[in-house]
Image (tube, rainbow, N blue to C red):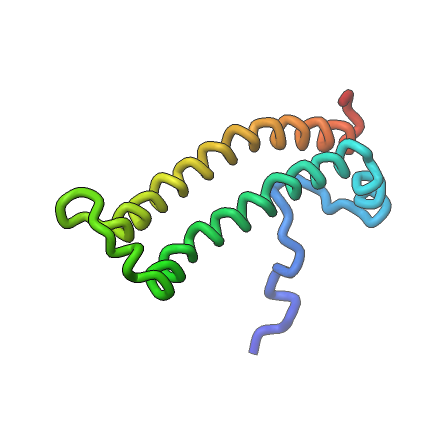
Length: 123
């Protein structure tokens, strides 16, 4: 039977070459106004975007279940409103992704400033 010393401790996963931050270092980062602003900005975007997408995604089965006559209305030939709504979900996913990617550039720049300040560099 193998002894515990033979197995590495995998409970603390760190990036290669990074020292684990101590509690004091994390407290300093967490108190940084720019870090707080970053967390607030991300939350202000992500929560509404997620709620919007979930509501949009579940609107199709709800509408088909409660208003089948409306969703069965033909739009073009045998294509009905339910088919168009289902197809629109693909486009909506791409639009939400595109908007997030554009916003994430700002989040990444702000995070880089926070990391630089935490490492003792210029902000």
